[in-house]
Length: 394
Ligand SMILES: Cc1cc2nc3c(=O)[nH]c(=O)nc-3n(C[C@H](O)[C@H](O)[C@H](O)COP(=O)(O)OP(=O)(O)OC[C@H]3O[C@@H](n4cnc5c(N)ncnc54)[C@H](O)[C@@H]3O)c2cc1C
Image (spheres, rainbow, N blue to C red):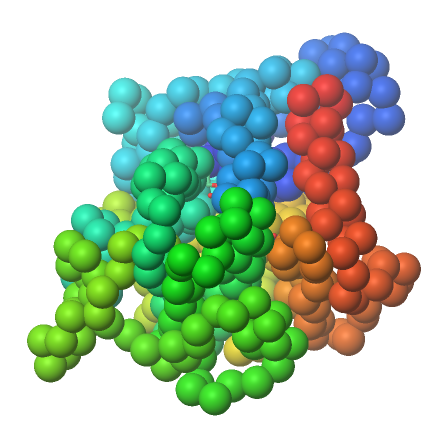
């Protein structure tokens, strides 16, 4: 009998999981036929069918990317792999992971992978949902920010982030917000409006006086560094401090810390101190049989404090989870772990930096790329094109 596998979510973690779980097709057409003739697994994905390439969202600011270009219907990619798709939302997981409940149905499985992405701790600072925009909520929120920005001829813009560090790593989006601040500077300069705007960068997670390459990039763009600052509340027209003082802002682009979505807490899934799905170094959900999770919804076992949630980390984790699920379905113990690596290109449009740290000190791509060069803007764009080509056609 074929083993029934359910995958929840159709974002980076789930798609990487599928890519590693199924052997890579050398010829997609051959794979299309061979998987229909013989397959050991009956795989179902439950999600909304829309894949969003989040790393491109900051580039909405310079008009290079838009919602249509970075959102794609993932159902043809699943169909080519003979994977059943259910357009629904999971609301609960029961029976130690064997039963998945959606708004419309109930599905049993022999093995489960959870890649449901992040929820944002918007309640951390009151007024976050009502008075700030975030690139991390998706293309619509970024479009709303852009619409408001386009209506301004002058003003004060605050860009910032807060992290959730309670699980011992960086659950939040710092790098993305640095990128947004630099791209905002670039876009306003191109319009000849930079002198009319103040751009502030704030985060309670950066020590006042902190130095380094990113700080240098912000400072050389005239961005005002409010390191260490956390408002007590976001309000109409700005932010309020604990003493009631109003800090005026015409626009706030802010992203809070990350945890797993709320419904997880009512399910049978264990939750870590920081609010993530609690997994071990093999990607197994603790205490449950044949249940795995990866990506922004889950924590790490013994992470280095610098490791962030990233699509890149989702890839490394999903690879281990896929191999371990295969081992367990074949009666073997899981043995695949993953490296910790922070790797991303900070695109400033007129400049770029490769931010990198790895638990094994391996350089990115054998060091063939420069660490600081405008040419990296093209490299970043190339990675995006290649990945979207793979999802569209292979
Ligand atoms: C602005 C921005 C820039 C970024 N830049 C980079 C970068 O340069 N490099 C990098 O490596 N990373 C970057 N990241 C981070 C990266 O996008 C995330 O780490 C990555 O998307 C995490 O993958 P995921 O699968 O865990 O979550 P997601 O990609 O968010 O996918 C989650 C999936 O689960 C689905 N889902 C959620 N809840 C349910 C439910 N209840 N039932 C069914 N389906 C559900 C969603 O619809 C979605 O399909 C960036 C993120 C942002 C926001």
